[in-house]
View 1 (spheres, rainbow, N blue to C red):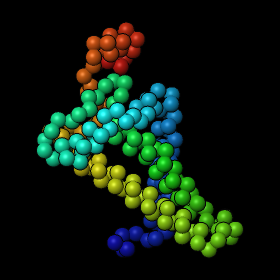
View 2 (view 1 turned 180 degrees about the vertical axis):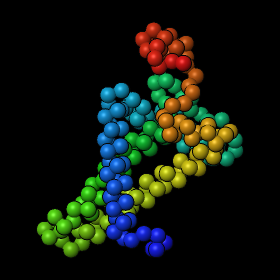
View 3 (view 1 turned 90 degrees about the vertical axis):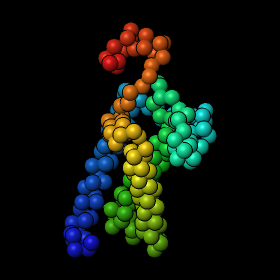
Length: 180
């Protein structure tokens, strides 16, 4: 694999991709707060054990998912905790360690000899955690009745949700653009 591109080219691609993802992350935070969708990421323990048990065992037995998606809460408790951890801990850790790594020439002289090693370790550990997150999502795509069933909601954030009568009335009256 070392013949695919030079180290310099790989670093440039890595840095450019990271900066693009950082901009996307900033935009996503802006979007969540301006649209109110940040509420979907507020964690709850209500039903968490049932959902965890489903993903650990029930999914392999063909059991029905214990969580009912709602307009006000599209993520199940495990998803909410996972996405919140990703956005509050994993992403900032990878960005901060990556920026420290990138700008080592500016601060490296003032740091101890092991500082760069620890930055590299932290960056690598969190990179593997994010890679695991992606692998889990690729696996989850295969658990639906069709390939597209779980893929499209992962890409565009929208899924069909059964609305209660109260939710439907509210949307028709106050937010007609959000109902189809």
